Length: 514
Image 1: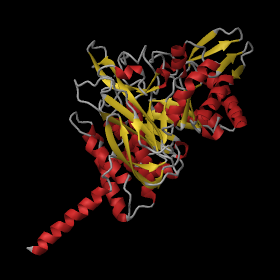
Image 2: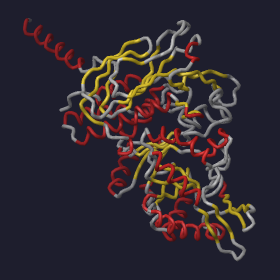
Image 3: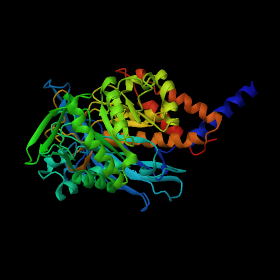
Image 4: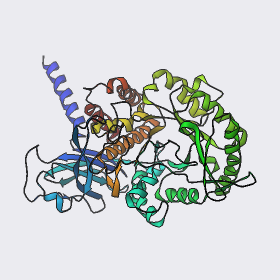
């Protein structure tokens, strides 16, 4: 009996010793940027003369505190029934922080220097005291992450909001903080357009073209790359890249645009395989490849397509490889590339419900060994997990971490800043679920959804780093955790993803890993 008691005592002591590693409220690696929310009061409570501050951290830490503001949106698209989400962040709060109820959800962002001493740090955020355990591991800067993040930028939405000429000095100045914010999550792709309206006009603001196609009177073509070059170099300077995605040789409804020598617009229906398609795209591909080679960008530029049929992909792939073989091809799609071995898709991105165990087994390692990428995406589907205004924040974390769990290379989301009329006050937009079209607000006001997505991406990168040198015991535990990232379980309406997030953070932030 005494032996049983001693065994139980030893078990409890061991468990408590293990939990002491996570006695802190938060844990992070050196070099990491941690985002978290904390409710200072319960719903309905108010505090007079409250302005949030963050205090107690060493001066070498970069920390800021703010308020999450409510943004209204339609519960269902076009329903007319409005609810709110506490999503739009105002850093420092301003004078409005004194308004009753304004302090309900306090948000904090802390960057831990890579050379800081590991250990536990105490600090106060708002009205509450917290502890942060800095783990003795270093997370590289976002530009060095292997996680392949591809969130599509929309320059014309910024130009509309700022009421300035696209690609003017004022436009670039307005884009810079937004684009640098995206780079903080490890964005690897510059979104460019090679013809007007590649997605028709599904967004509130239509996409223009960054390359002018000019049909000369003698039937020859000239191309003006000035905006394309300037924009790509700007994105690189913001920390976005090194890859360039060009949309699209197969725009929706197959409509492409050009201009004549007088500057008058020409509209052409260019279906793959047609004479108009070859007349429009062949001279462009040849000239574009030459231009990219001169710029040193040829090996990292993709001809990109969005949800095109296998027949279109066959035609485009063969056409590009014939006329511009050094250009790469990427697509977001709904088919299994292993069934079409003649297609060499350098970056293939299926929607999440296609990422089955069979799909992973048939594609991921084989493609990786051939130098190809396999990522995944969510968009207007699924309802859950996603990054909608209505989504739990844990869903954003889940979406960011999912590639690490399934051995994928990264994540794609179709809209970083495709804003509706005024997303600060109403996030609704037509048939799209609110939040589907943007992850950041105008004037570089951040969203809780994006910063929680970044938390998940950082956890995924730490998971990858740890797995490279993990013991068999740790690998088994990591595999068990990965199995819990089951899409069909997560999509259930009542699925609570918070415990899974906590277990993920517990694993990647342990002080001692065997």
